[in-house]
Length: 160
Ligand code: FES
Image 1 (cartoon, rainbow, N blue to C red):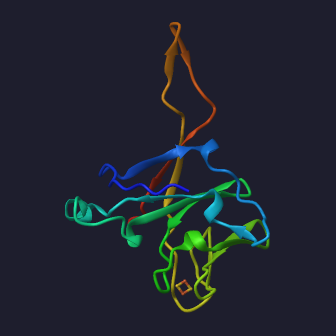
Image 2 (cartoon, rainbow, N blue to C red):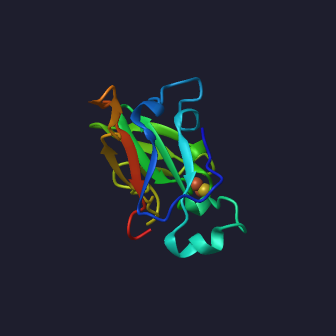
Image 3 (cartoon, protein in one colour):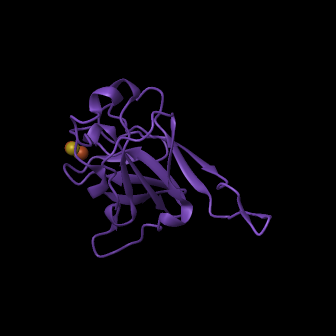
C-alpha cells in the first residue's frame, strides 16, 4: 500500500501506476481485504489545492483508493460515505452476476463497486473514472519500443 504525501498536479486525470502494479486481491483468512493490494493517493479537490499546500496532511476526504478485484480495476473514495472511515480497511465481496461490493470495516455497510449504491439509506460511494492508456513510447536503438502494461489514470467524478 502506498500513500502519497505530496499533493499531485491539478490536472483532472492522475496517473496512479501501471496495471501490473495492482495485484488482484485474493481471498485470505480474513476474506478479500482491500488493504493488501491497494494504492491510496491524496488528490485534493481543485478548490482545496492552494490551501492544502503546507498546512494539511492527506485528509481522508481527498483520498482515492485504487485496487484490482477479479480482473477489474476500481477507483473509489477512500472515505466511507457513512461516517468517514477508511475503506482500505474494508472487505471486497461478490455480488451475483459478476458484481462486486465493498464492506466497510467500521459498521458493516456495503457499497456496490460498479454503481456506488449503498445497502442502507441514500448513502452512495463516489466512483472515480478510470482510463487505461498506452505507456509513453521510448526509443531503444532508434526503434520505438512500447509496453503492453498500460498506465492507469483516475479522475474524480464531477459531482464529488
Ligand atoms: S463508517 Fe463505514 S459503515 Fe459506518
